[in-house]
Structures are given as structure tokens and as C-alpha cells.
Image (tube, rainbow, N blue to C red):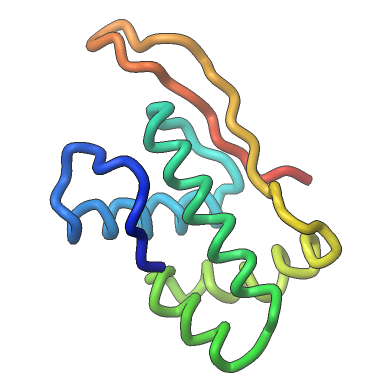
Length: 116
């Protein structure tokens, strides 16, 4: 996914895209994760886009998801488990819950989940 908008998360482009890809793979693998609120917002956008592309189930979709998600097992889970679950849903497959502030640095923490 090429992004021209959104938060930079204090990282250069390559590091930011790598972060989003790995966090999205972790979200798809465990179906929830805890992170800072700005990262959760960006991972939510990225994950929603990956699921929207995967819903078409074409060869192009497999290749585009393969470019965004580095893990084969996670890609298999996306197409075998998650796409059938969200096939009829027009969007909004993630939910973000704010947890408050972290004691160490005061960063706002959130949990991002794939909804059932």
C-alpha cells in the first residue's frame, strides 16, 4: 500500500512502511495487539486496506497482499479465515480501545482488535 497521507511516526518512509507491515501481520496473526494510539490508528488504516484488497480474491489481490504482508502463514489466514468472516461487511473490521497513559513516558496506549 502506498500512502501519501497519515502520520510519519518519527520514522523515515522505509522504516515506517516496515513497521506498518509487521504490525499488521501481528494484528492478523493474534487478532489483537497493544500499542500507542497513533500507531494503532495507522495500523488500522493499513489493515483495513489489506482486507479490502483481499476480499476480491483475484491473482492480483494475492500478489498485492503478498507485497504488504511478509509472513506466508498470515497471508494464508487472511484468505482462508478473515476474508470469509468479513466478506459481507463493507468496512470497519478493526476497533481501537484507549487504555490511558503509559507510566514510563506518558504515551497514550490503545488496544487494536479485529472485530468478530
